[in-house]
Amino acid sequence: MVQGRTSLRRSLVGAATVVAASLALVACASAPESGGGGEASESCVRMVTNSGGLEDRSFNQSSWEGLQAAEDEYGIEAEAIVSTGETDLAPNVQQAVESGCELIVTVGWELAESTLDQAEKNPELALAIVDETVEADNVKPVVFDTAQAAYLAGYLAAGVSKTGVVATFGGGNQPPVTLFMDGFVDGVAKYNEVHAAQVRVLGWDKAAQDGAFTGDFEDVNKGKTLTEGFIDQGADVILPVAGQVGEGAASAALERGGVSIIWVDSDGYESLAAEYRPVILTSVLKNTQDAMVEIVGSVLDDSFSNEPFVGTLENGGVEIAPYHDLAPVVTTSLDGEIEGLRQAIIAGEIVVESPSAP
Image (cartoon, rainbow, N blue to C red; front, side, top):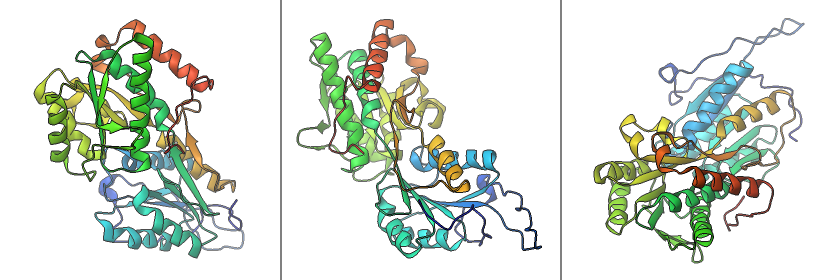
């Protein structure tokens, strides 16, 4: 536990690159003055995004939504500092630290080095990093065993596929990405085992830990091109694990017809443009929102520790989203099988393994 902290009680320092009122940031009321008539201050948290930006329809956005929920629950004030490129990362983390807030949240592997650097320089400060592990006494990793939920999504994909071919691709060959892909491939394999089927997965070789990647998380056209190639090879259910790039996959699916998409991190049915709703089969969810609320609460009540928050099916940290408009293609029998797998994973009867597991 980080010592010497009683609450988030430090005054704020304004910054030009901090996302402001246009993004609905809500300032909280000043804390009560001390009995000695001391200066009033505010409770605050700063979040630093990775280069994907705040509205990435992924874990930047969901982490921010969690901090907004913490604003409502605890009356704190939260602001986000948006990184637009690699050169922004270290300065933005430093700016967050210099804000005077006692909780700093960073998002993604790109910020790991800067997070560790500032943690070592500021041992009394509480930091949390989302979707990455940093080992320090005052840094809490917020990670998710997405392979568990992706396993269910893979089984679902195999069960609804009419061509017997499904596919997945990533933005980069990184553990938070390949963890989804490992679970997805294993879920398809389980379906094949149960149903004596031969559904193939394009885009990922779990044994080799290599597959199809776009090389970034922002270029939508790369996602569209890669998806069109998969569709040409017969794939009719595709899992993009590539942030905004996945929107290109949804666009290709919509244009080609007869193809559905499994989104990641947030519910794509809600976070993507409404035009894509007809092709969203489900989403592999990370419940980053609840994790953020929990961590803010732990700092406020002085129970913050560096013990990782690991989201699982058991604790609700990961899950698959409703089938929404595509519910009619999921038979009652298939849905029941998926629920049985969920319970088996929670009970430990099925262990979804991955070298990238948290």
